[in-house]
Image 1 (cartoon, rainbow, N blue to C red):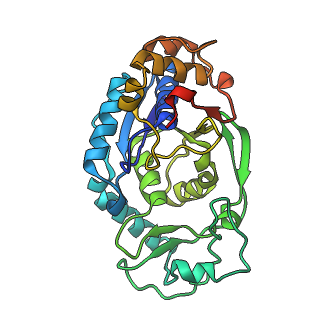
Image 2 (cartoon, helix red, strand yellow):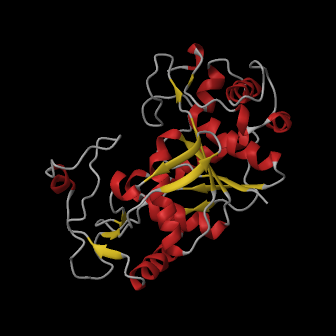
Amino acid sequence: MTLGRFAPSPTGILHLGNLRTALASWLSARSAGGRWLIRVEDVDGPRCRRDLGEAQLRDLAALGLVSDGPVSWQSERDAAYRAALETLHAAGRLYPCACTRKDLQLLASAPHTEDGLRPYPGRCRDRAWQGFDRALRLRLPEGPVAWEDCVLGPQADDPAALTGDPLLFRRDGCFAYHLAVVVDDGAQGVTEVVRGADLRSVTATQVRLQEALGLPRPAYAHLGLVVAPDGSRLGKRAGALGVEALVVRGGAVPEILGWLGWSLGCLDRPESCAAADLIPHFDWARVPKGEIRVPGPWAT
């Protein structure tokens, strides 16, 4: 049975791109007769706010997207992440890292990645174990990881070359995104991960972590991003409009769903509908691969 999930980070409102991802995940699960969960990824404490998470849940509910089980909050899952680190340490896969961001920026010989950062070159790999109270990285094996993306088709990356050994525990005491998302997907039994194409590059790294923890690999679908009319990227903290603001601009909820459904290939043209109306028409083969531009009246 398909078990999908939507996992927003409560650092701002959900814009049309986030809502499109949530709807695609929900439709995929529903069209397969499966279940769908919401998980709030608030593991990065300094940037995340509980009230924003609650607001995101209200916006999803306004579109008819409600979790089939209790909403999970990552901030309440520290024990599970600590246990995963202990498992990795016992297998000899962790090492302490003393590098600062400035240290990494000085390694001019390393190539840049898409987000402007350099892959970690493994300079601390030979450091002696010093306990769980400092930054920790996962030793990645070399070699490509291949997967069949529901939207993009056949994909392959060598995460050791692309990003280097990922950070799993930060020096400020926060568990890193890679660890939390992989542990939670495994614990919840998630079989399908739907997210934006901007996260495609982390897939191979997360697959390696799944392998290290003995967790099954879910199917992946990476959607083209929703962008502003001028092609610039939307951002939760950069003025993009949420559900309430879209309604004020004249986009009633059925109209928002109709536009989202059209953007996912479920409708021939944008027209008012309910989320359930789109279920029979959802097919990954019809989902566009490229970017989708927000209608002018719904732009910031």
